Amino acid sequence: MARGLFITFEGPEGAGKTTQAHLLGEELRRVGHEVQVTREPGGDPLAESIRALLQNPELALVPRAELLLFLAARAQHVERVIRPALEDGKIVLCDRFADSTVAYQSYGAGLLLESVHQLNHFATSGLEPDLTLLLDLDVSLGLQRQDDWNRMELRGVEFHRRVRAGFLALAKEHPKRIRVLDASRPVPEVARDIWACVEALLRERS
Ligand code: TMP
Image 1 (cartoon, rainbow, N blue to C red):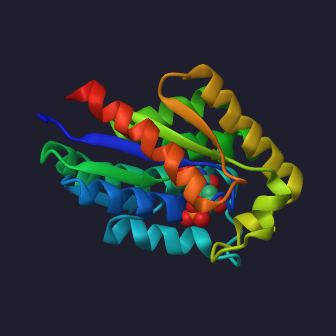
Image 2 (cartoon, rainbow, N blue to C red; image 1 turned 180 degrees about the vertical axis):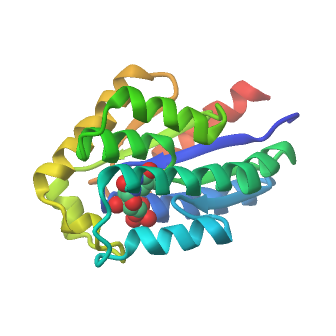
């Protein structure tokens, strides 16, 4: 492989992205691939510090400031972690990426879609995933599966419904890149479908 493969996991809260990214990582390593599992916001010391700011429920971030923090973390992560790993021929599995910004900051928080797309493009310097696995889930079910991120979970259920609709709209716009998977099913079933998508992509690439 001249260049690695960039696979992202997206979806509303509680969809099981983190678990699935790690399971896929293990499976890919088992069959001999070099894999880097990473996440957004984060994946690099500076980006992880930005994550801590974004997670703090006491900071009353306005939506534009929040957007720019997510993007600052992404620019750093792309330049320092993702591109170098891809250049080394690794398979990069990233828990959330630019689609989350469209879904949360535009569909959810109401920032202009066009501006979010442009700024995303600037932050990623045009890097796009080869495959995006969208783990789709009913919003109330997802919010019951709480994790350690609390500021976003403080937002109302309507916010999260718009986020989910945003992800589904993105999937319609990019049917080749984004695969929608029903994440309400048991973990091993979802993992099997993910493996089928990834195997097909690897076959296509070889
Ligand atoms: P997670 O680590 O549980 O996926 O949480 C990350 C939170 O940050 C989640 O609520 C989604 C949110 N988020 C955005 O709002 N915009 C973004 O661009 C990214 C990457 C995450």
